[in-house]
Length: 88
Image (cartoon, rainbow, N blue to C red; front, side, top):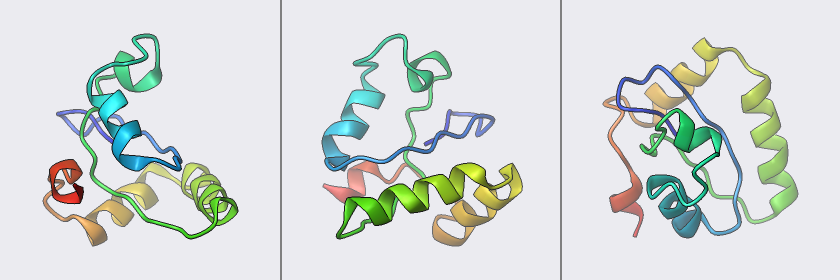
């Protein structure tokens, strides 16, 4: 997820993507990172069958550089459109 200026990137994992993104977009947790930095735009996602695979990928992405994250988003979503509405 990112903010309107694409200056902040957030990576997370969830077993319920639709609900979790809704929580981010609606500042359900007002003291959270996404609320503080206004990261309301879903620009990348990947579905996994097993949660352990998702957690491994989350850790890999978080360990990577900002450039690596931007490259990943650009490969998946070159225009950085909000993908939330397209999912559901």
